[in-house]
Length: 59
Image: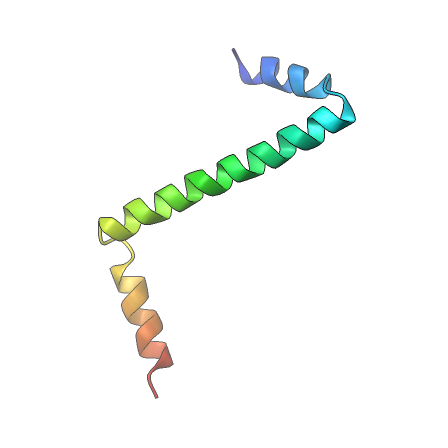
């Protein structure tokens, strides 16, 4: 299935179906973001940002 196929299918959804799809897609994107942040944190890619934030908060 291509992006064009998905776009065409979404365009044919009834309003209630579109709302349900939009809600699902938003949750899906949020879950992917959370997984990426967790992976970045585990790999240490956020360590420097954390140090900078803590330094900015220190009086």
